[in-house]
Image (cartoon, rainbow, N blue to C red; front, side, top):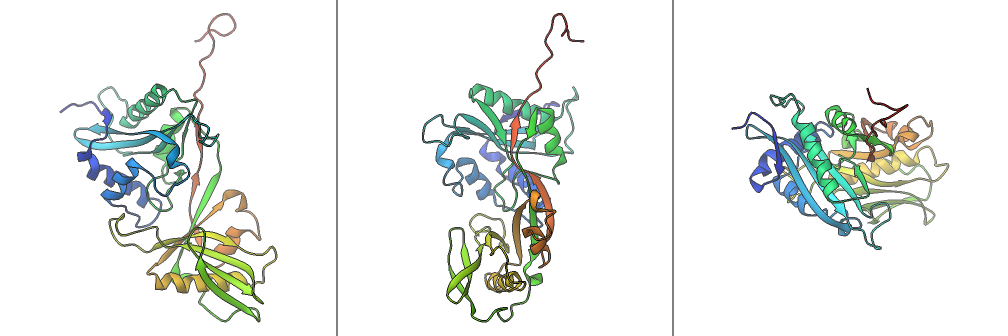
Amino acid sequence: MSAYPQVRPFHREDRDQLTTLVNAHAAAVVPGATVSVNTVLSSLERCPDEYITDPWIAERTTLVAEHRQQIVGAAHLLRYRNDPDVGEDYRDTGHIAWFVHNPGAFAGPDGEHPADLLMAACLAQLTRWHVRARHTDGQLPAPGVTGVPEQWPHVRAVLERAGFVHTGHTEILLIAAVAELPAPGPAPLPGLTLHRTLGDLGTRLTARLAGEPVAHVELDTTLERPERHARSGGVADIADLVLPDDPHPGLLGWLLGEAGRWLALCGCDRVLAYADESDAGAEGGEIAALTAHGFHELTRTARGWEHRPARPAPSGPGGARA
């Protein structure tokens, strides 16, 4: 048994330890979040939820860091095709889809942490793929876990040491207990009715006034499909929320009350919502509206990272290195 950490390709017999590592990271962000071994294995082969970008992927590989027969780190890498049908931002790029590691793992005798060895192997693989740009975003196969959340300072530190820079936006993840949403009640306006249909992203509840749609909320209750997750859960998310520019003061509360009624019937006890950090200070913004109706901030997560390694100082007169 080597005293040195080793980085190697993922083997199927690693599946239980890898799932444990993924679940530890997910549960630090979303309370009670767990995924099954089958979910993790399936995500290494394809991303069915990413029906637009997944067909653009040319190669996938998963690397693990092992120390004394324990998986202490793992990363999943993607190479996107350099073809005209691939979106311009993705064309000929390499992505570290997610990177996780045990912050308490011991360094080897030479003092190098297994996570840094793993990151070096990831960058070497991206170099072998000859991609034009390198990105990462941290999207685990678990609901609500994307980017680099505040709860993962150990992951952020490795990314920054390796030369990754946060170039995207910061997303705020909110959560509410379904029981704490507004209680269903009478419509706040005469003639206001509720209609349930299938929307683009989930079950759509539409508020109509005199037959005309004025607001809607879409609920995705399929986040924890039983065949994909380790235990039956009760997490849903607000996939879309549309309100008029100057909504009636009681409209959102009424709509969320009806959403809560439907979520309870679906067996959901928690609901997630997403918003951009730029909305955080807006008095009449979506975050303020949601927090006034039972939601509270769960985390902030840094979305969109690009590899921009520091260039060595030029040698010679005027630029000699120390």
